[in-house]
Amino acid sequence: MSRKPRRILLKFGSGILTRPRANALDAKQFARLTAEVAQLVRGGCKCIIVSSGAVAAGMRVVGLKERPPDLTTGQACAAVGQSKMMHLYASMFAKHQLNVAQLLLTHGDLDSRIRHQNAKNTLQRLLECKDVVPVINENDSVAVEELRFGDNDRLSAEVAVLVEAELLIMLTSVDGLMDDAGKRIPMIADVTDADRFVRSEKGRVSVGGMVSKLDAVKLATAAGIPTVIANGRRAGIIPRIAAGERVGTRFPAQQRKSDGGSFLSGEMRVES
Image (cartoon, rainbow, N blue to C red; front, side):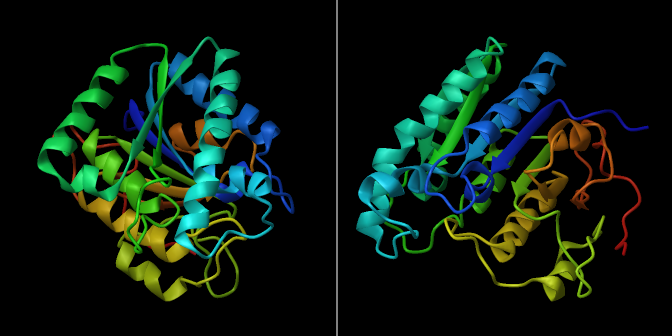
């Protein structure tokens, strides 16, 4: 059996952090997800979270029921919601004697050589702290690019590459990639094979969708990082994925990492 990953990037989408049919953060979800991350940290894993949810968290304050279509209102929602979201993360992780570190990034931060290195240095130093979990979000309150990271999907892949993660877990509101019959596909060897199964629907408070997730998967797996897309509303999903259980849809790394590979670099095939 291949060894378990020791550095894990977890991406939480807006759809799993907000209450269904309500413009508010789901405290029960935060409690469960942070408890599962804390379990990994206690087991010796280094965990980094890329979290959406700031815009959704601010929508009620701004008086909206749907995600705002205009950039300015979206930025206003994010400015209100970011502090609410981080307060919830901090309070939930504190129950497990863990602290959180907030990092807000834009595409320019990762595109600039100097800022890219600064972000990498900061994250590396934070990961040396045993009781700190970095929580990263796109800096929605100032970002002006029309082409966004896609509900932080691409951002999660770029940060996974930045920190040399051994596993990327993308949690969403579905069980993984579905085939034409609506059945979960357990593993896809070549992510380009997945394009034929993609549907374009998005959630009420999200801006991503499976298209942006697969784009992120392509980036991560090409860099040697195995990736799993799974349902973030299923209890125990995070430790099960980290343990190598066959949940969600797995995308093996397209090349082995120099340290000997990872737990998902086994047989590569499309399953149904």
